[in-house]
Image (tube, rainbow, N blue to C red; front, side, top):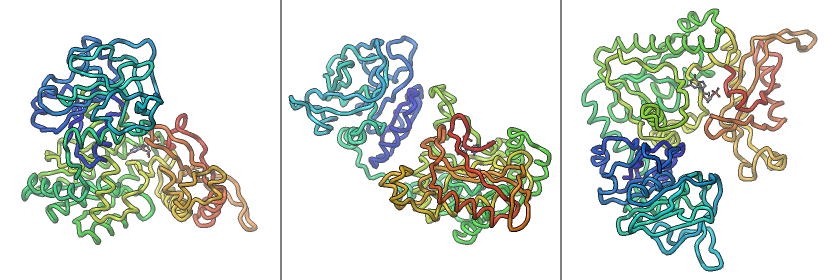
Length: 536
Ligand code: XMP
């Protein structure tokens, strides 16, 4: 396995991800972790990440010296290269220009890292690689025993190596997809240079995880808050596979879930998988507390707190439970680790339904802590969960509470659930066509995929305003439903989805005809920023 030492780059997680895509298990630790942990980890190779810091400054983070004395290969990326150069006796200086974006590097000599990997060759037969760079400072003097591995016109030392010790370093970012051969370079490092086999896969993860859970909890009882979301669902399925009836799931239904979601959760877990699930119908409690509240933040807080209260009450009834299982996944771990060590420069605000308090006095069981979202999905399918559920769009913790503008009422929730179900059904059933591609609504490769799969998140929003309409011979005065569909990579920024007009028309017709209380449907054409994805 491989260890990535994080110096706070925005793309550190991508390194771990790419390495795992090569079938090699990999974890990230902050660069200032106790060196003993690095030793204990027993990595076959270490990667030093990038950073926003300047390597030539005195006070900057360094790799623990031990890293260079373990006898395992080390790959420095960007800042990782610069600190490697500084620490091993080379020189780094502030550049006069920042280099950002695409660059073409020329390989020098033959190194194991680049051998045979190139996008093209120049007239002298030197390999050229199209890469992605993002740096201001650069290495200006090689450390002793290092040789030049790559250069660009503005960065004469863009790669260096001390092959005898297995030390390699590159100024560019092989982990981003803009570096076309990046994955091959990382695979070369972890497999050929570090000697990792590349046999890490989901089925082997399941076996290992089951063993680990059994060893960890023994004969103790475990409780888990099942939300219907992907992470908690997959955690439940995995833990159930490991310890069966020692697991009890508590499913708090706040009445603000998607259409028939409560039934589906019970159907999947209780009936199909045979998991012991306590279904707490807390709709009245939630609605009662939300009565008269219109402020979005206040609503969120109430929902979060009510959730914790209900869960705590249920947990309190299970006196034998020693463990609280959670569907914490790797990005959550990194985010909070980054927040603690101050390594990451920008930290996403966490907005999950209330973190459960320590007062429960339970030990934490988090079997998905090492996995990325797409790995969690693969695991879910491997464990027999319905792929349709596992690949669902994200759904916010406060549920429809943030999609019913202003005061939340059961009557509004019902209208919204139905409208949303129609919208999602149409997205799932409508495939992109050649005509859509011709109109540039999708690419050629996307033809045949459903619009559900071509959007990242889609939902209906209930607007508590009435507008005039005409149905049959009569005048109507009813509510408005907004529909929103966005495309995004990371949910931090998003485009509104350009859905075909015919599809929008059908959705509107069906909602107005099938959902009582609605006579007007509007489509949200705002990007994020300046709008957010949710309306509240
Ligand atoms: P915004 O509206 O901030 O949403 O653009 C970005 C993503 O986060 C989800 N979201 C939430 N998820 N609890 C959650 O678990 C929340 O309070 C919450 N608010 C927004 C939103 O659905 C989108 O995917």
